[in-house]
Amino acid sequence: MHSSAIFLIEFGAIILGLGLLGRLAGRLQFSPIPLYLLAGLAFGEGGLLPLGASEEFVAIGAEIGVILLLLMLGLEYTASDLVSNLKTQYPAGLVDMALNALPGAALALLLGWGPVAAVVLAGVTWISSSGVIAKVLGDLGRLGNRETPVILSILVLEDLAMAVYLPIITALLAGVSLAAGSVTLAIALGVAGLVLFVAVRYGRVISRFVSSDDPEKLLLVVLGLTLLVAGLAQQLQVSAAVGAFLVGIALSGEVAEGAHNLLAPLRDLFAAVFFVFFGLHTDPQSIPPVILPAFALAVVTALTKIATGYWAARRAGISPKGRWRAGGTLVARGEFSIVIAGLAVTAGIEPDLGPLATAYVLVLVVLGPLTARYTEPIALALTARRTAKADSVPARSATPPAAETLEPVEDSGIER
Image (cartoon, rainbow, N blue to C red; front, side, top):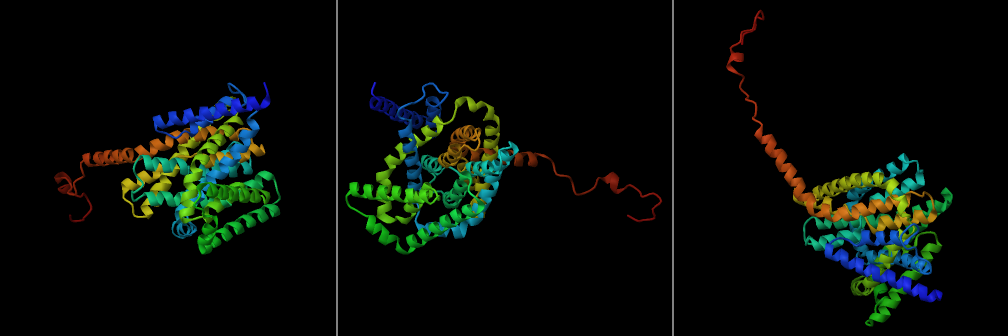
């Protein structure tokens, strides 16, 4: 059969399969990400039906998926929102980083993977899934809750941190010298700062330049600009994803809203392809040896995320119920954990890192919606039970027994 026909059959089967998996996930009311990863495992090396002709196209589609994920994330925020969150919520961001990045780094070092793998796994365990969390908030009807701005602030700070983290990890994975890595980081920070400044001061001018009443023209201009900037950023060793994120920040108002509506279906398509592509490069037989450390890491970092949300919500003056809801909602990991792990897998620094990240995300992307729903009632039930148990213990009388009161003091000479 002609190679182009095989490509069409394979790629068509992938897209059809993803659509059916997405529909199944919708009926089960949870994120389709774990199903996409499992599909990639099934079609990759060691799977049931390895791909052939379409694998190269899937790789390109996966890269576009990462770019669109970060672009859409940038469109969610204005530059002024980011600056405001950075000023007021940075303590919560520091606590989030300390509690959730350190367990990943510690596990990598304990496994003997080295410092570069430790930095990678720290990012995998640190960053929550904005996509999964946004969907969970909508499904549970919590978008108007008092704790929701706290949750969103933490997510925004994580996204800002990605603009710094990704250039660092890109330089480390490339094996560049300390001087070259410092230059890369300086360029990334300089570009990010410049974009934020331009977006705050001249955001309306940029939006007017991009704006168009014709949806087709708006789609082509925004998508073309994003891919161009992402390519230039990649050429500068900064990260294509960071470039796309900065483009999203620079656009605001009606342009951002219009571009979001037009690009959402493309984002969903190519993001699904990205998760399949990551699964393709993970041998299913490599997952069982790392399932126990992955599960242990998932449990630890689920607890640390709950602690992060609780602390941040308490700092904002939220009630105990809202604190537990905030903590449980932040547990889910997903797209960014896979993006970070995918960079390491491509660089080939540690064979077991990809399988461990896959198992870790599979656990938490399923556990996350459950913790969002049940952390509050479970925590309150345990608290009420502890309180009831404490109340059931009779308090000691402050008055000593009569026998003790009347007991004489022998040979002391002290009067009672």
